[in-house]
Length: 356
Image 1: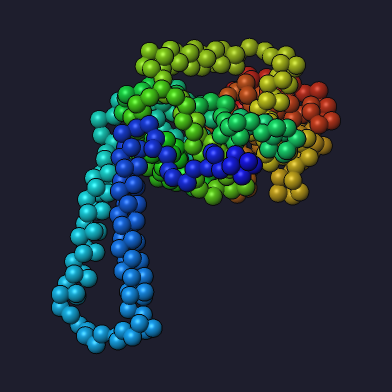
Image 2: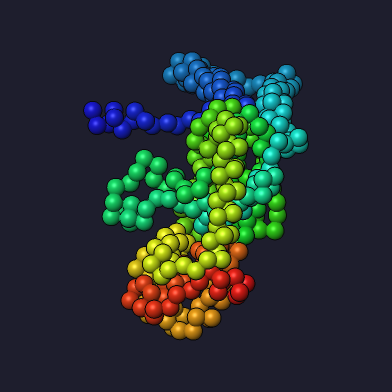
């Protein structure tokens, strides 16, 4: 019973997907598969028939002919025709997959260690998408959810029945943008921009992840695409623009320490804990500790500069382009007052704005 239950959800075939291209890819995959099955049956059938029918124990003598012109022609022509039969539909599919013309909208995708940034070129909105799986689940201190390592805080939201072009690149190392249900997979390479597209037929949530070995947290870069009706998508765009305006207004006000600490803890756990650990103790000399560090307890200006601009040549990224003024002020305030640092310092968003 246990084995039956375990195999009930076991899938060995690729998903059919929810787009015209993904269905075409699936049909092509099955066509090639059945051609290979037929070839296997014919070849191995002939081999085993010959082994049994013409075995030595039956007194069969080996044939002495060789260099048959007819056999040589068939031996060359049949595989050639099979390859042509495979190449024609495969070429049509590849051409269709690469045709990004006449797109209804464009989204720029940038891979970072270890998150994605989505920039809606036509709407003027953009955001980072981080892994939402709790650290406690990753470290086996809590139960793993249904979508373990496949949940994000900010998914890509797109309308159905629209041709969407993706421009894919990376900021640091090579990543790969892969969503199986949409038949989308393209390398994200620093300094290069690759293109791909999709048109989703059905509303739903479709999940993927980075498909390139991009570092220690390579498995922590999920991709979630939420497809919805166009009117719902337009409402979502309006909400994003309103939230952006609210964030800009929030950067001009004076924040209380408790509010900055609460927001800073969330920002720290999302962006810093993977390297410096949730307790701020770091990981040896590779990822220095925040707890008791000279940076987090020393001059504020140096701390702000380090977080905003990073350290070239090291794993310490520049968070200035990635985080808002409020987020930077919050996480720096948190680092200077958490883990026993207790400096009492409060960094305001206006301080960050002045330092940019």
